[in-house]
Length: 303
Image 1: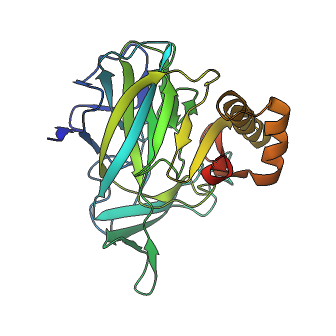
Image 2 (image 1 turned 90 degrees about the horizontal axis):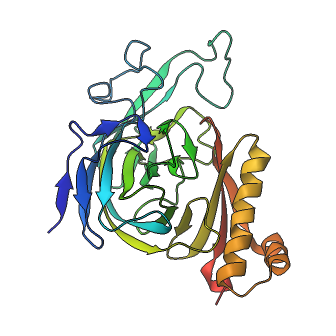
């Protein structure tokens, strides 16, 4: 039986090392967790809803549900989170919000002004307009564990995860994190029905509330795991988050060199050369305090 963890009373705006856990879960247990839309409940209620400054208060966006205490999870191990299914709400939105985006006019905060497009999400599509339907690609934008110390806002990211905004983190994928605290302290939130590469607008994905069904495993920590790693049916992937963008890319590629060398029989030099031929890489978002870059390798090339 799948256990439901409700969002009410369990929403947080930072992933924190000292936060009391709201629920305990076991390895192998199937759990469904409610995730609130990024601008909080009650703002987007219909396709006529609008985002206005009096309704959104940075940095109190991207509420994440948690933390969850994973039984038997200890520092020195790794937490593997497998996402099985995502049930989306029927209304999502995207918006232009001055000061948040790829081209922020941070002094005057004018840009294009405030624009909201709220959309129906149904039958496997984002209904962009009467003539355009966009196939959904559900993903979890915020996912991570408690950091080594202190707290990191849910608008930000780091080696603990957080606001990664990676399209590959969705149904069928497994994300592995270094565990820093007893019980791991797992958080999930900020779900998207669809997101373009770069998430070029600050609220640029189809933001939406969702229920995420997942399970966890506690595994031996990979030899040189630092940043979260992803495995899908077709690829392995590493992440890096940094500014400037080239540092995020370097980190993602460095992590992949280590993974290929430690688990797939390459020397580091061979792994680096191999990536020069076959790497699939891109910036998944550049609107958070630190950009996210992904490096992917197709599994069929490793067999």
